[in-house]
Image 1: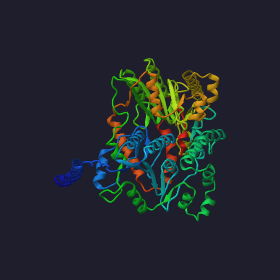
Image 2: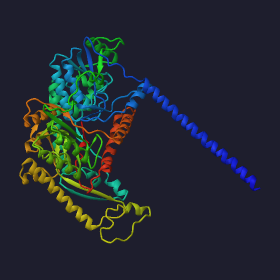
Image 3: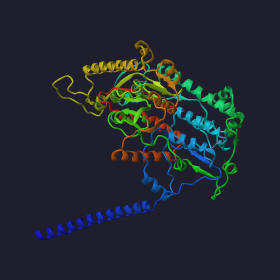
Image 4: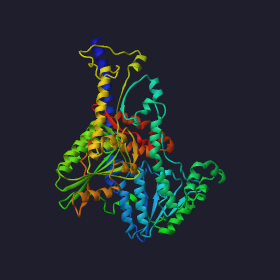
Length: 620
């Protein structure tokens, strides 16, 4: 009997081994097939020869995805496979400087007869960036070449940029969305109460509204007043540009935005006709009519299309700005600081306290770098990381080499913390800055857990033994300590601004308190020195360092394998959303819900203190 049982057991063991071996063989074979597919695809993959425009073709200026100051690494494998399979491979980001370089080069390129704006895939973009691109298009037009905009539908930011074109065309089934600007946020107080989360809020600054979503169900009166104070001049700037470029009146813009229903009724419900009658566009053309117009302007290529070259192809034929390494003839280094400020080393899209400090130190030790321009595009973040960056800036200044801040669409709160000690601060008139305040927010879940029948209990050697155990309420002594630390951090922030900007403390207290300012107001208050572009800041840095001749170059650190993988993953996710069939309104709603939660989850200040502003909720 024993031998029989052993034999049966051996049979089943053999069958198990066979099935395991067969499964492993099948998986390995499948994996090998995938590898062979990738190898043959990539080995046979060769980018098409960059098309050359001859006899006057158009530069197709496709602004696809978010417009960024520093671009994440692309995923060449995905690009190659997408091309092999015939899928679209639209970029999820377009580098701001690349756009300016292409427009500048096209103005003197005999092969380029015009620029055709393609704004259908335009993602997040700063108002200052749109204005700078608009100014570049205006300069391009002085060459005698035309700028044409043609879309099926114009959202507000796309139309604003299109207004700088010589001719604007719209599909007869399309329309122009011009509705004003606002700052709207989601508020979670009732949801937090229902989940019985105990949010411990600490903040200094009456107008510091970053935590209002977890404290309230609606915008406070202070925040409402403050937001209107900077929204109003920004909208005035937008309408002023549109009125000037389109030769319209302010009344016509106001009528279009404030009386859209009655105006649309007058136009028989036809949104395209309304845009034409309001003078927002020059003509209504379907795609075939538009194709014929473009062929007439630019000629026809071998495929029967109008002659053109895409932006990414054109960039491969021109010299790019700021990419040559520094040499001994005098160089201005450019460091990009874009995104939320966080502790440690962070990838592109975030500002790491350690990683940005490392770049500044690199510039400090490089004898070929005579000055640096720090391009800040940030709503702030970790106080600790901001201070690490500021400390490195102070070390840099000991060398006697100047440092100039160039503010992008936003440089507020922690973004201003790292800017205050610079030799000069430049901003655009529509930059959002200030927000000098500080906060801490610590949720505890003892009530949430109790609803599930879960409780925390124990003993410790001191009243603070539980520390930040989120399953327990904060100890009163710990609350008091956090409050004291918070006020110390705020006083430190005020001193940094007072000393760095040479402003009396009383005046700093008046302009601080969490208030946000547009660039022009910040200039009037002394928070910034001059209004201008990145190019202006670079020229000023060169002048401060005594350089009559110079070249500017980006300073960046090598990326780790981990960062490259992170970027590849991020790019795939972003591409998924960019190429999805979700309506833009749905994606916007998802972004509004996810963004504040994501930022709170990513914050990693060791003391839990943050100088951060949520004014990025503003959208054009």
